[in-house]
Image (cartoon, rainbow, N blue to C red; front, side):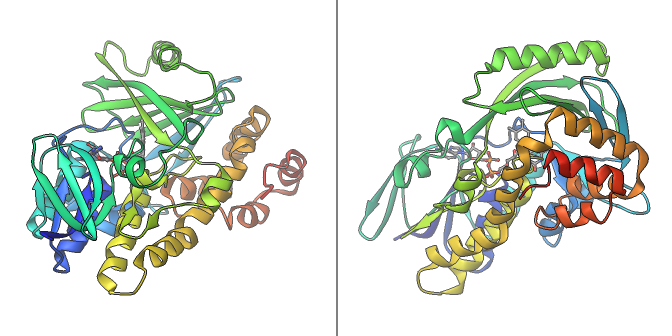
Length: 393
Ligand SMILES: Cc1cc2nc3c(=O)[nH]c(=O)nc-3n(C[C@H](O)[C@H](O)[C@H](O)COP(=O)(O)OP(=O)(O)OC[C@H]3O[C@@H](n4cnc5c(N)ncnc54)[C@H](O)[C@@H]3O)c2cc1C
């Protein structure tokens, strides 16, 4: 077998896995036809995600906007509250980067460590002689003992070796890049239908603006994008900026899906979006892509028997169980009666602003959210929240 591991997809999950495996001496081939490319994505990279890659990447040289504030807007009343994200209390909580730059740095680290980069799409994968044969669009064939599926929400590895994500396990994100404009504030306008928010994330030379809805909820991408266009016009957030449309799927798993994830079997592992690892509320996926990639590399390099089981258990315990909690409270989180109360509370209480800043920074897990809110909210607010049962789960 020419390679120990073939990694399909060189987004953060695949490129980071390839880097870590090649650094440990594995023979790695990394296949992706798309780089350099701008992935349709908010590009919000949390402090905890940067901390994972900081030992290897020159993150201080990454062109990125350091976010100073997050402004929450209630769509029905237009009431708003601003949460500080940097300065004394939350330094480095969130930066927004171009995915061309961020992903490009990780791909470069992988090839520096010795991974062979194949710039072609993998078109087929089949078991062969105790390993795998991978056919690529440029006609080359690669062979490896292990395959890692890091090929995003529409993963070919998933389709060939497991089950594809079903429509009810996907959401569709759509919107515009507004060129030639930036800021140091993210804006999140909370909407009840579809449950979630319209966001504006400022990158160094454009705003990434969008909305997300469950793929099976009956909202067409065109209608959602028209809503975003109207929002851009009404808020005046990007006057005269050329608007470049995008649409892209994001995994959006139910609590049950997340409690029973199928991310590895004999010979293959799924990481990042291909494994369905995205926070259902904040839509943070980059951190989980890097973290699951690190788990995959550490497990394969450890030489333990049945690495597929070791990896699955670790993903379940360290990632999926908390994401399942988020999926359980999601409906309540975006209910208009709750978001009104939330904006009110954000306006009134430093401690609630701190909880929200930590949620955005990814440092507030969902297991302790209920406890922290209960110990943070004033009695009156807490009572009203409990009546709405938002903290259920
Ligand atoms: C609109 C939007 C906004 C988002 N905002 C944020 C945010 O602000 N912060 C955050 O943390 N997350 C955000 N996310 C989620 C984040 O983009 C993903 O979770 C993250 O990119 C997952 O990384 P990945 O490496 O698993 O997959 P990807 O980044 O999707 O990379 C998959 C790679 O696989 C390659 N590939 C696919 N098929 C094949 C094939 N057959 N052969 C070879 N290569 C293949 C693709 O070319 C691609 O490069 C957002 C997502 C969207 C859609």
